[in-house]
Image (tube, rainbow, N blue to C red; front, side, top):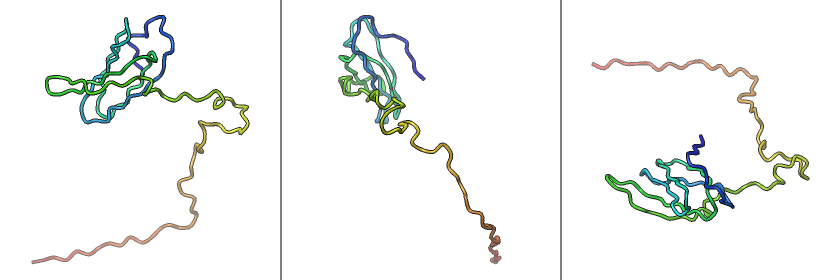
Amino acid sequence: MAQILDPLPPKQSGKILCCYINATSKIQVARISNIPNWYFERVVFPGQRLVFETPRKGQLEIHTGMMASAILSDKIPCDRLMLDEPSTDEFDPDSSDGKDPFNTKPMLQLLNTKTEDTRKPLQVGSFASVD
């Protein structure tokens, strides 16, 4: 679910879509503080993926939570976290190969196509009493 609390400041050109994954076992706070007139701060739980939009010159700070504090553990230029955008050819239904890039697998798969009798007798184990 997208959560847009603070839209990008006006007059910002070159916005990009980015993704950060918290691959640690600790709660992290992701913050972009180098863009004037814009506040971006999100809590990222272990294993969680954060997808966000930012100006190209944004720099993501990762603060790792400890018991009563948080330590700045990384600074990542946002252009390194940019998601690859598909080219316009991939969306063109009249492209030369005629393949749909999104529907590469069949929607339904047959689970069991055997027609022979698969019934087998039930084998029951015996119990012995021990004195």
